Amino acid sequence: MNDLQTRSEKISNIKKASAIFDEAGEIIQGGGLVAFPTETVYGLGANGLDADACAKIYEAKGRPSDNPLILHVADRAMVNQVAATVTPMAERVLAAFAPGPVTVILPKRDEVPPKVTGGLSTVGIRMPDNDVARALIRAAGVPIAAPSANRSGRPSPTTAAAVLADMGGKIPLILDGGPCRFGVESTIVDCTGERAEILRPGAITREMLAEVLGELAPPPILQADEAPRAPGMKYTHYAPLAPLTLIAASREKNGEAFRAVIREAMAEGKRPGVIVSRALADELSEYVPLELIAVYGDADNLSSMAAHLYECLRSFDDKDADVLFAEAVPEEGLGVAIMNRLKKAAGGRIRFID
Ligand code: TXA
Ligand code: MG
Image (cartoon, rainbow, N blue to C red; front, side, top):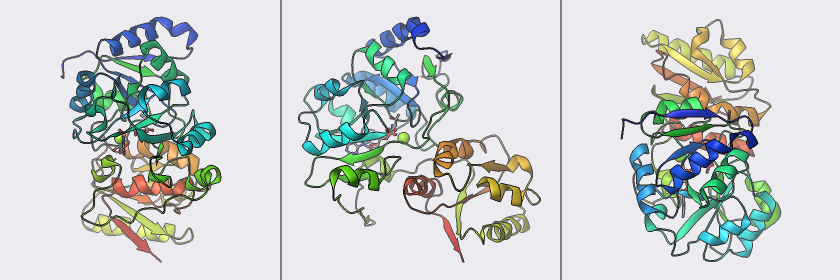
């Protein structure tokens, strides 16, 4: 599956792009793949009720087939097409946050093929807050199964160019809706049990969910031999090409901490690259060549850091950094999701400096 011509179509006005949505809808109905923007990251979409079409997603991504896909719906009515029951808990989450960056886990209907859910009896459902995504779902007329549109293990794509880098030659069409607003994948909430449980942190934070649900199940403390409840969370993820280490220091100590690890790397003959907030980037510009500094955003604005996280990781793909260091953020609010992704990208390598 490496011989397709991949077209990337810029969508600036939905109404004027009806021919492209007709074409994209036909590709999905015909069992093909279309990449599309959402408010979180770009998705790689197929007809979510067609097992053979979904098999192509796993093939294009090189994704383990036990890792279930999320079904994307255009409106509340479509949720009933894929969920056997919508629990009161899910109803509250959807009312408060859909469309938006949240996925609810519910019992699946028989119409949803086991291929989509990795054999589970539950299904992940999400209503994206993105006009291009919802226009595509409407054009296709079916729920669209879509994981992030990266090759398995790579950072999720937040621009059409990043999708093209990973999926070029493997899929016929990318809908380019510009850069994604949130930049980290949806919060996954299991709504099948007694208490709601966050399986993956995202932009809808624990505090926001607690406000509409009351008490949530406590965050899991994973035992080494225990499979995570969101199967995808067990795999290596978001990894840039050069090995990454997180540097966790106080704001006052950040500059000193980074200078130390940079010196150390250079003494070993390595070229270090850094992923840091704006203020720290300014501070390090004397020590690291500019092209090896990627700026997340402002340390006081976690949303901007989340939005640029994956582009920062990908920006080193074509640079000759041997090692990467990224600035850790406090694990509060959106910082929980950012650190969750950073720790996976770093394969757990984190240095605490005080
Ligand atoms: O923001 C998002 O959620 C993006 C955009 C494209 O919508 N999608 C996304 O999909 O991140 P993906 O496939 O990269 O991640 C889906 C995660 C995986 O960790 C998977 O294991 C988990 O959701 N998941 C899916 N269905 C599940 C289920 N029935 N039970 C538990 N976890 C599930
Ligand atoms: Mg993914």
